[in-house]
Length: 315
Ligand code: DGY
Image (cartoon, rainbow, N blue to C red; front, side, top):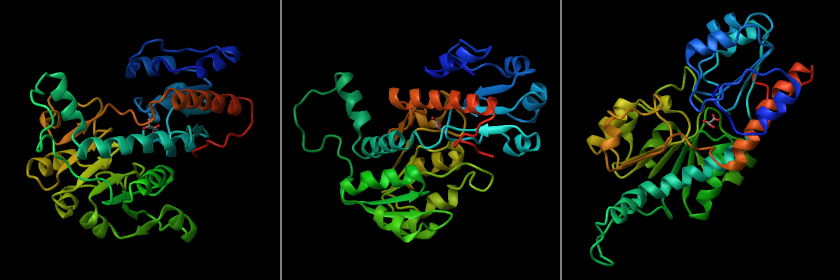
């Protein structure tokens, strides 16, 4: 994978012979296929698709694939299982940081923070306080809908309580009473969360069933004053339909940290829209979290190569 923060690389270099891409760009598919041959362990990130071909090239020595991420939708887990390769992830370490960023997006899009900042920087601020300058929408007291109530969704709910928000959630399985109570959230069906949320925030895993869970018909059921927030995976939302929804004012705006294809191309209509906030997939991007992720990803490899168990096993 590309160069990653310490301490992971040093931890591995102390024990093993490591082939590491020192580049700040991800390795090409060709480089991955060439360098994976005969390795015991593979450290990857969500930029690299680790499928049957990669595992095949690695050969029978490969015991562990450790991803420097919480999501593992870029790895063919079934294929790994078939080959008895253990797949590990970095657990819930990013939940609080991602919840912080989700809230930053909620505030940024509803209060036009990015537009207003640009306005000042572009020296367009000519008069002082103005009664109608950058009017946005309240966050305080509004209804927040959470699709997905895992650790990140619940951490977002915790922040929302401070804003006195009415919290709804929809999840594959309803949470047990105690968790629901702690979250101060009401479980509702998908249709209700779409119709009632002022902010609809996605915190679900990406898999075959959840891909494009937010599609044209769902966007049409949202309030035209509502905002869609996504800090999970871009492919949970059908981006073409979202663009249509934003252009036709089916919803008021969107704040996105993730996209169907990353990086977002310069030709994406999203880039020219004022009612969106766009970030380059930085949900977990704090020094503290990235360094912990690096440590966990390296430790996962060490544990497995030394015949021990890790709590961060996927399969
Ligand atoms: C993850 O880990 O899955 C995030 O999307 C990136 O840190």
